Image (cartoon, rainbow, N blue to C red):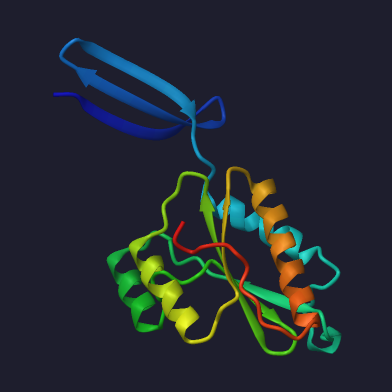
Length: 178
């Protein structure tokens, strides 16, 4: 019976995935580039969204067609004590990574995923719940690089802002279950 182990580490400053497969006929080791960490996708998207002229961080600058944002980091590793505190204070598994508050009382929700990362069980439950409550501006941004995630996020937000200009709610064709 074959046994396969996977490890992610750094070699020469680059993240790599090492897959070792042990069989009755021998051992094979395959080293390949590791998928990008999701926090890097989100960080670059936030950086580029904040650089948009429509982004505001002060109430005096709010006008039609502007937005601000807030990130979430539900996936952070926590001690048992920190998990209890997080749950008691309302941190909810499956929540989107980024919330966009769009002028006029609209909410946009973005979930970032690496190219190979599956949607979690909690996200498969939470995202449809929010849609059922009327929060239909939800998107899954799946990307292999931070730059790709940022470009998709900027395009997405521009679409939401232009839909808001037309005074019609819209859900972009991005499934939260893909």
